[in-house]
Image (tube, helix red, strand yellow):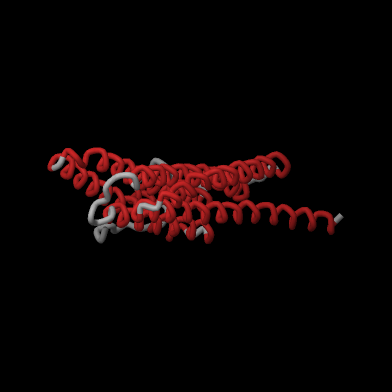
Length: 242
């Protein structure tokens, strides 16, 4: 019987590793969607924007595929302890990745719309700067997920505050433009919608970081401040340097 048990154990490990691998595959696709959507917006490339919109179906399909595999593992393997936490973390993570894909699609739709309007001299540099920060945060969150590194996850989660600040800056800038020249209202509102989508992507990236903490430590920190996480999970007391 021993060889059979060994075979089953190896197969089970392979199944767990497969869902982790597919999450990273989905994450890579989502990162590409963000990058392409931003490029479409800042360059006025309508065809690229439309390609992003079409490719959202691939993100959705991976979401369904991984979710089904997780459900099969739960039903067949009845995982316990850390294995169950991994499966639950994967299910939660792909939900946020799917929503990030949706937000990238929104940016692409704004890109297609803005391509028909007169372009500002800075080619939407404010969106490019915000988008670059958001894209890096998503990449770092996925890197932390690949290594299940809670130190990196908490560090990455802090970036959400900086993104919120940049988002507020874009909002103030767009409001100023609209007040100074009512002819920019339509364009500024579209930029605001794109900025809002980027801000939401930052929120989803932070969620992924929290799921990493959940998997490693078995603690749900979704409604916990970063300071509490660092104190309770990482054992840090002095946060005066923040």
